Image (tube, rainbow, N blue to C red):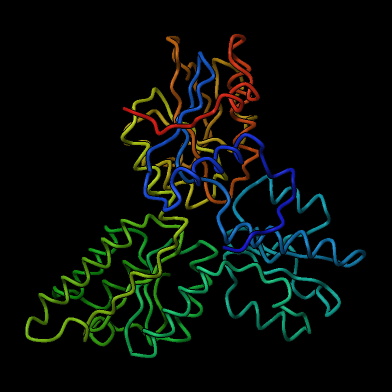
Length: 413
């Protein structure tokens, strides 16, 4: 796999050593058990997979190259390049301005742009309408296009099934940048598109396939989530499921299986492929690996879990949701949220609010802490979290000592 030029301040000697050892021990990536970093009074159970994925590294390399290659020019991002506050802050400090927020609200008028400006496409891609607007202004959108290749793979699958007259069902968050980008292409390639947030919404749509519900009921229930002219009578006879790549992979598959079974039941005498398109290969490998590694963490014993990443990061939020099923889980954006040994500031994803909790660390030692991060989180941030925690324990080993004696064997429950 291609290697990227990532700024050194995003790297971590400790995390790099860990990842190197795990690659040597598990080259086929079949072992999803965590590794143990034993600092004495505190132990970290580190996920098998975490941190920058291929798409994020690609985006970071392109973004910093754009800054380096265009001194004196105005440089813009259509929206946040990735959902990590530190990376986006670093870009702002280097003179990059953001044209929209994560929800698509305009921050800087596109009318102010000229053909001399540099505009980068974020890793999530961009809606076709925005790209067309930029190109009409003479702004090249390809040179610094950081769209993730796995997002583009979803678009290709969307195009394939759309041209075969399947209605496209997108498992995603309707306001997320990636889903908005995917929707614009699906809308171009298919007669009909619907966005489904989760299995509950999938089953709500399913009742329009199998039950006697009206068009007006559908339009009210799915307002803002379907293409203009969508007809439940015409457009729910042939469907295919694609996804926002950062959604929970198991749920995407469950939604696809649900609609496949629904079509089998409604059309028992016909080939299922006539009414359902198999699209399972749109799942992102990094999302899958990080989520599989989180399932590996769930088999461990620990007192709490720390998940590091941007609060608007979809893939990170799903790691939080998984870990919350077993552990007290604290979603933090950086080491700065560890206010003291007693107090932590964290984001409660289910309520979309920040909260301070005290105490959060148990008193009995050794304390076992699950640790992982989202695909847009630099390794350096994870090491900062580790260093901040061990600073609360005067008798803890240093990271150099741990690296020196590291065997990093798989954790045994």
